[in-house]
Length: 113
Length: 112
Image 1 (cartoon, rainbow over the protein chains, first blue to last red):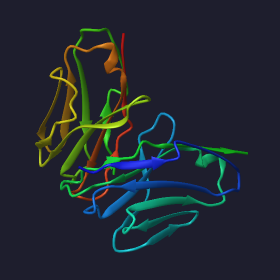
Image 2: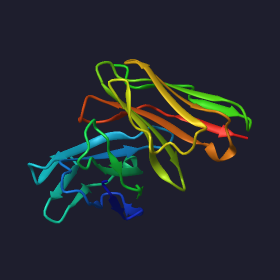
Image 3: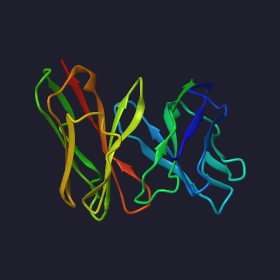
């Protein structure tokens, strides 16, 4: 099955700085890579995703890059704000059907004002 | 759309009692997932259904855990008997086939 590794486990930045979270996956059949943000007391919410036919996708201050050869993908947050503080999860489906995802271990991002 | 609905939002029970968690997926979604989240183990997939049929229950920790999906708009996760180590946040998520999973707000379970 799919194995997803996520780093770092914690990340602390100053407001306005950039933050980068990296994930690697094992199953070359994975073709969809979502990122979720989980705020305290809430369920994970999708913030951006990328499919294997593109190398980069941007949505305002967040972007995701994908390197299929190296089997890794990254989340980039620019101009961080205190409200970006949360736990972030990457995920990959492997070669499974039905939408099953394997999640990374999560990154606790803290943005200091 | 109302999103994924879970109930109850909080549950406190005593060891040995039966616990039933409920989930209503997003209308039109045909895959449903049950997860457990703890600090120690992170986000664990317990079981998932497609078109109301259980596809993979290999993540269910023990026979004390069972899940059903009697129809496309309702699923339950039952723990009987409950133990303190079952204390966690339980999430339900749904998706339309292989598309994005949408999570509910979770049920915070405390077993004393």
